[in-house]
Amino acid sequence: MKQHELPAEAGPIGVFDSGYGGLTILEKIQQQLPEYDYIYLGDNARTPYGTRSFDVVYKYTLECVIKLFEMGCHLIILACNTASAKALRSIQQRDLPVLDPERRVLGVIRPTVEAIGSLTHSRHVGLLATSGTVQSQSYPLEIRKLYKDIVVTAEACPMWVPLIENNEHNSEGADYFVHKNLNELLATDPDIDTIMLGCTHYPLLIDKIRQNIPSGIQVISQGELIAASLADYLKRHPEIDLKCTKNKSTRYYTTESTEKFTTSASIFLKENIHAEHIDPE
Ligand code: DGL
Image 1 (cartoon, rainbow, N blue to C red):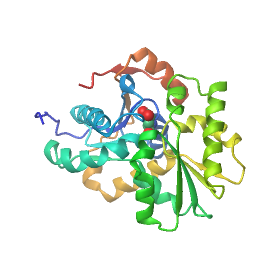
Image 2: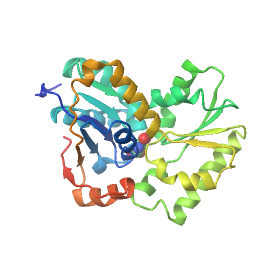
Image 3: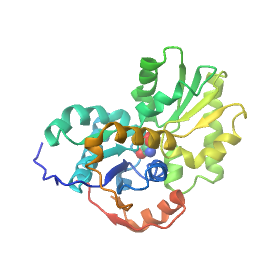
Image 4: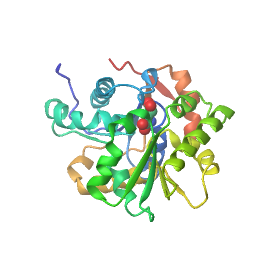
């Protein structure tokens, strides 16, 4: 791997996603931890990751992680299930020791899985995620490590991210695909009492999802779980907390056009933001 100049001084917390989905996580993190500085990086030029191979997701994610390190981050949250499933372990085990063993990259799957145990009563959980996350088997494998009695049924929803990224999540097309995927999920396991949104884009479809399932089934999105887990992590790791600056600022970067990001991000955040372009390679 080529040598990278990484600034030693403290910096913002990095939040990464393949596109806009990670904004649903960033928003909850900012609410829980408002004093910190953040850099959000969306790899919009190469989204979606959900249908890409392990090698490609790993390569893209690593490139973005290095960019965030170069911008001063010491702690990065992969606010993307697909990247957490397909790239996190390699980055933690193979790349961090070479790049800088003192920096940290955390994913969103483990904290989500930890919460599942206390949420389901029937012990039948449904997972909605990208094809990549479903194929990786990361959720069932992690759940089995912690809760042997929980049955997980996963449904890949390959159309959902493109619909959201193209601002079509309120369209009839979105109705069709949400209905179809939820029907398939509940036909496979009618005992599901908890549905996990295992993709950070999906909270934008939460109303439609609720309209398509019986009211007794709860739908869990990840934002608050990840925010609580990060707050706990920073408390348990004061040495990392010291490397995170606290001036209440957030900067947004996209690998796509800044106009497109600014317009679409405001749909996710319900506020206007200013974005800058970055080339990931
Ligand atoms: N938001 C990402 C996730 O949580 C995936 C989006 C994509 O397919 O790029 O999985």
